[in-house]
Every structure is written in C-alpha cells, then in structure tokens.
Length: 88
Image 1 (cartoon, helix red, strand yellow):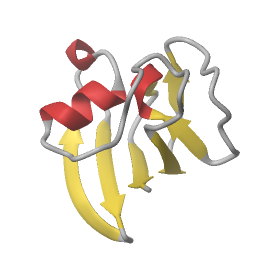
Image 2 (cartoon, one colour):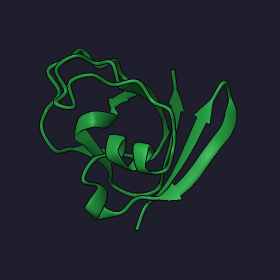
Image 3 (cartoon, helix red, strand yellow):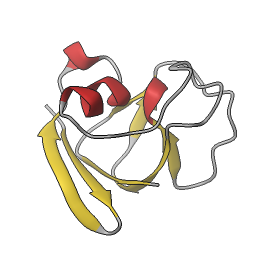
C-alpha cells in the first residue's frame, strides 16, 4: 500500500498509508486528521488543490477544475505509489 507524506509550510505534518478503502486521497487525508480544504468532492471546484512533490496519482474521474503542472486535486485522485504532497 502506498505511503502518503503530507507537508505544510515545508514541514512534514503527517505520514500515513493509503488504503483502497479510502477511495480518494481527500478521504484518506480526513481519516488521518489532516486539515484540508475541499468543497465539491468531484473535481469541479479545485478547492482541494495541492502540490505533488513526489510520485504520481491516478484520477478516478478527470478533474474539470484547472490544474497546473505539479498540482493535483485530492478529491478525485488516489496515489499510484508512494507520494509526497504540499498543502497550500
């Protein structure tokens, strides 16, 4: 199972193992008590945008919100392997 390392303000805030039962990265973050912004949970609004520092994610559904290179939406993605993200 993939490991998710979460940074905020360039400091490691949390590290946990992603389970397929979590279904999305956003669900896993919330389950592990990481305070993260979100609204729609469907990839429409972009509120859950964060920087992908290391690794890759797979999108469950293609986001409709604009996503810059190096950014991901946690609401509609899951790790393809070990990842490191920076919350904005």
